[in-house]
Image 1 (cartoon, rainbow, N blue to C red):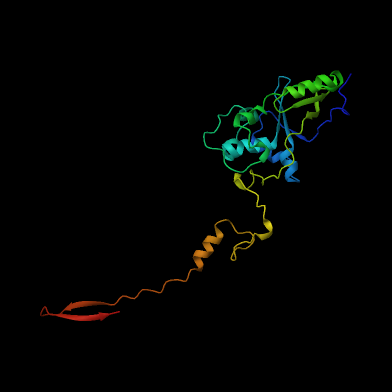
Image 2: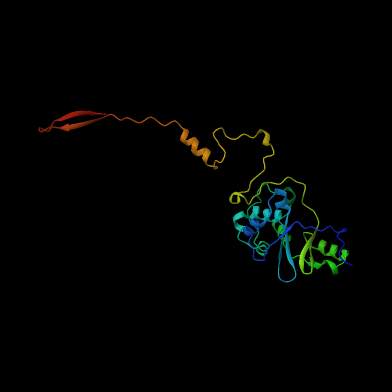
Length: 231
């Protein structure tokens, strides 16, 4: 009896990528209509042995936030799973529901995921296989092609921070009190972060020119000196 999708709801919010795709390349392929669509969407890649990597983008964001955006952009998903844990303290911020996960916990989400054919797998077998994975996820195939994921929702519900992969990888935080936030008086739209400082320095009243009075002793033919005032 095939998997009953009325019992186990299929998840089709995923993007398939090549096995050798790098994190930076994957980011460019992901839908970004909303912050939630990007963060909570899944990335799926075939490993070539009948298994897959299935990871939520928010999990990659958290790995990158702790290890450094620049250190993960050039890695494949399989390399993310084996990279050494950072020795620096966990930086503040990030997605609240991932705060209690260690770096190794996050990497366990990247463990290979089983794949099953919908038509030849029972609903109970699919549930058991899904729940045996650290991230509770399973790939469902239709004729050998990925048709759906079976997942368990564990993360939604908290406020997301801004996209940490934007603006060259700076980790951004959310201002929860935007109603009272005011830009600097001399800041205009489109300014770069250092523009306000540069303009403030330029606006400083210039110092008056310094005038120096000095005396020069001029020697005449007899060797006597004659003072000359120059200003």
